[in-house]
Image (cartoon, rainbow, N blue to C red):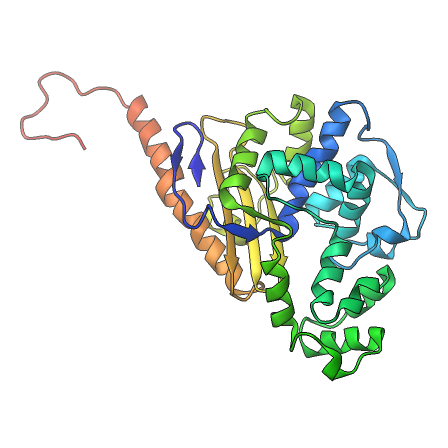
Length: 320
């Protein structure tokens, strides 16, 4: 957590690597918008959906017809708004994975390696068996039907025609643990926070593209999910969540349009239930930010505006 006006910072484990899950979609968006700023793309450039882009996850593009066309702006909005993985893959293919990683390393740290979401799925399943790297896109969507657990393991086995004794991991928890240890799609919270700070200070994108990404990151649309649940509705936020097996993240900037009031919050959790416990933990973080930084900022502002006491005030009174 960092208050940009003063540099005041609170942190815990901010310098250790964290799996970012779908919060990697912010550096993807920045990479795309830099190409817009450079004139290589425009927000209205039409892009064509291909089979190689499709993967499971939120959003509807995985079910759209191959050859369907979408503007860059609509894909960015889908990727950041509903976290559509297929939209993200199409954008990554457009800008190129090498270009994406060059940008990500400059923003998040030199050791960062981002991949497409198709690669994420194949590499996780490859921890069950290496042959999973040859699963095609429709197979990836199909095996994602059952919840993570024995039924999805069985689905992978069926698609690869494997026996149970052929598996290289006992279950999905072991497969995910091995995948996380490989360090793909991972960065420090400090690095991610630095990226968000540079974004709101207008140092990463043109003014027009900065406002565009704010809108796509739900500026002006408040909810109660995770960090939002602990932050007063009066505060404007840009944010992006990420969820993976027993991992969750929520990255945000409170009051991004006003650097004098802006607060960067980058938070991740591991080894907890990503669907139930993570929300409670992040809401408590949001409440702590509100209590320690937002409320105190308001109190300090009121103190500055408060008139000085008149000379000859009653004896025995002590200002606090």
